[in-house]
Length: 351
Image (cartoon, rainbow, N blue to C red; front, side, top):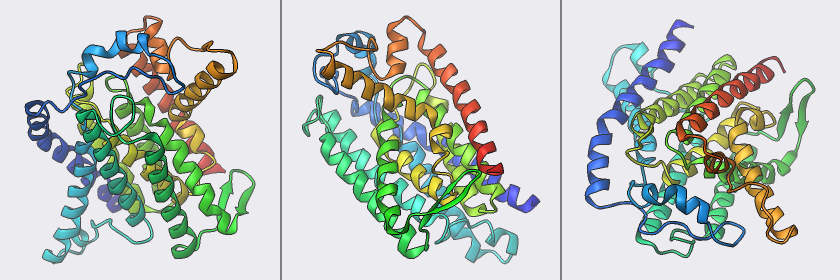
């Protein structure tokens, strides 16, 4: 038990300090090359202009670099490589056991984290250049959705074929057999979480929420004796905290797609590995609420002849438009995230 705790915490703080160490080099590069949007988004998801959003975010959008999410996935990758590499060079069995890269627990979440982050990086570069075909630039939404569904198909296939998983757990009831249908369920879940990536829009908001979610899953995996997966989730949380150190107001950079796309796709894998996918909407409630607010806004504009439910969507921008300071929105989201994470953990552990 004690060693397992050390195995979780040691890589976590390693990821944090790696993130802190590489950030100055990244920020110098981002600012030197003006890696920010050259144009503020002027078209909403459901069509029409975005005058309120432009008023609230024009200065930040065109003056703050994107691609801060690089800190997260590079820190995770370097941490994994470090603890994988030190084992063969040590005669100490405990040091060798610190390696947490395993086929059944961490290969797939790491794969989705890196691939999703690289796709997001391409999108960020296109947005910075103002090309690609999505409003102010970037990959077209249809292309990003297609890539997420492709990753989801790979993940679902891996679970069904390689890991032999064909069911989901219903809390307090038991396992429900899906058979091969687990593949489309996996794809839909990943797409749902990806859509929650629009929460990245206020300094410190996305980073804090995602750190809390991955910390909750580290706890769940630990109590399920999936120690390697627990280490992976904790390392991701540690890397996010390093990013958050520089993202709290005033943000030095934004996480953007290279962070959110990798994190949301990887989180899908973690939820299925811990058999808690049906509790995911509770643990990740801020992401779900953000997505739902967008859906409601677009639906209202189409059905009610342009009438809106919120002043601006997603809902965290609605609170901004009401006059809430950004730090108040961020910290209240963090509080809600903690409460939801604890609630979800309780349901998973006793259900």
